[in-house]
Length: 538
Ligand SMILES: Cc1cc2nc3c(=O)[nH]c(=O)nc-3n(C[C@H](O)[C@H](O)[C@H](O)COP(=O)(O)OP(=O)(O)OC[C@H]3O[C@@H](n4cnc5c(N)ncnc54)[C@H](O)[C@@H]3O)c2cc1C
Image (cartoon, rainbow, N blue to C red; front, top):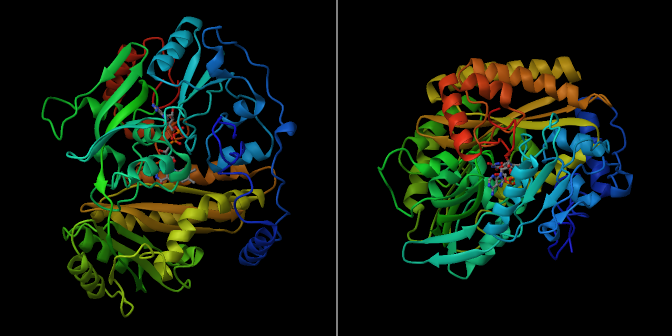
């Protein structure tokens, strides 16, 4: 049994994934050697993984009523495991064995009535309630607020993990909010259907979390966010249940679904959703195209995104990013492009996309882009290297944190007309901050999603940290990057959500009047302000 009560390997309470997975000691030593050479510094030995016995927690301030006690845990590992999300900041603090502010109680409701009962308890005892899916938030979305004087109950939705109904005709399913990505796909597989929503955190994030954060997934174009797949919702709020109507489309006023999509747990608990599904693709074509110049490659991506071809994958990696993932040698920028279909051969669309790439100076390897019907399509060569690096990335990130590095990402979006100057200035400002704060380091960029009117660039920072100062170092770099991207017209987040960590910049980005509207919605649904205070508003 793991700490969530489910059979299977144990989840790490302090970082990403399952215990025992990720790079082993030899690989860690190799990684340390490469990075020491790259940055010209000797990296310290990795900080040992914390053991739960080393962690001291404050005594819980509240105890559940007898009627809910069977759903609630005050176990040390449970509370520590729900104290943080999975950002760099979270892992650094957990590695320091610092857990000053865990939830007092972790509750695991098994149905909607129990969710409602837990909210009722929180209301009557004036407790903070934090909806919790997989806990993969990287923006402080599941962390108890520091200023909470009252007790905190984290409502872990992991037991709401079933696909309840499949409508094959309309290609949709009614799915509970707490289901993790792999289990969701397992339950749909027998029906020949898939949600095809694969954020990098897929293995340890949930449907409800994806909807609550407007997560960005598999599709690099067209259906980039979870939003488009939501057909209807059930949300338990302190003021009652909200259920929206299953419709393929509707013009009946502002969309109630859209009010809850992206609400980050401040308006209610998403217990169920009808989701639009896809047939499982049978035919896939993928290719990698090399470009000498990043901005020329970006122009190729613009042309492809405006062509109406709608590639499933269209991820541009700059030279540093390509080298890190093994998709390039470090001298070239790499565009990973893919099409897939359950219905027709995407060969013609791939051929046209590669033609566009060539017209913009891209070098297309011979035989690239062939349609394949076997599962290994997209798992070989540069495309496969990128995919493997994407999947193992979170485990590697935790090893880098243990080696004392400052290693984090941020993402944004900007229209194409402003992209070249935006990218230049953002890279310069972030690079300057990295050198000033860390002495050396690397900033790289890739496009995670692209739209006809602009890309969503995603920046990765890796730099040697000063022992004991990594958090302050990252805070300075993050502030420099965030201020620059906001000043230049970007968004503070494209798909990682706002949480608590992005508040200063989100508050600048949105209008005061919109903040008042959101606050009014919150007051109607959660008049006592129980749910996730400090996230988005308040
Ligand atoms: C290594 C890594 C890679 C990532 N890659 C991606 C990526 O590719 N794309 C992407 O979009 N994000 C990514 N993220 C961020 C994160 O995985 C997403 O925000 C994800 O949607 C969170 O889902 P979760 O179930 O883990 O939610 P949690 O982290 O548990 O919660 C996130 C927020 O949603 C609220 N919430 C959770 N469940 C519910 C519910 N049922 N009802 C109401 N509110 C709820 C919480 O209160 C919190 O505010 C990544 C994170 C990590 C650590």
